Length: 226
Image (cartoon, rainbow, N blue to C red):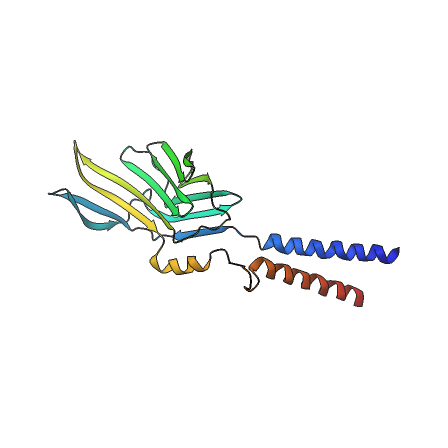
């Protein structure tokens, strides 16, 4: 009877270790793209309806993107845009962010105290409300992928644009943009959820279980020795 009790305790201990390691290694799909500061562009409109870049300005922190990010976890995707200053309310200023993958398009925009989040997926259009906090705008949507990883080559980018008017004429604008650098696309492809089909090597989850089991057995052996 005593031996049965010991074995039950050992089985419980092994299960607890495996569960703990799995929880520690359960990560969502997430990406943060940092953006240079003091790189807001100043453009002017010229004849013919075109625009011309003039210079970079360093005195527009409310327009200056510092980072954009997304996180997919638990059936939700949260996208975020952050600026060096604060989110400014103005009818000539617009903040926007877009995430595009095979699972759908998720985007939000904010201007003059009003924001809207939109997700375009196979089931249609869904609306959400962005949340504003100091220099951050974030919006959470229902994720329509099978797992917590986007499939295919996805696009992700944000923009802040301030239009400059003289009377009824638009004469120029300040703008800052941020997006996934081209060199990151290959890394993103490698970060996709591993394929564990028949005849393939064990997937990451299987390896974690085996490692956890090994750790548990080693600890139990040490207990018996001691």
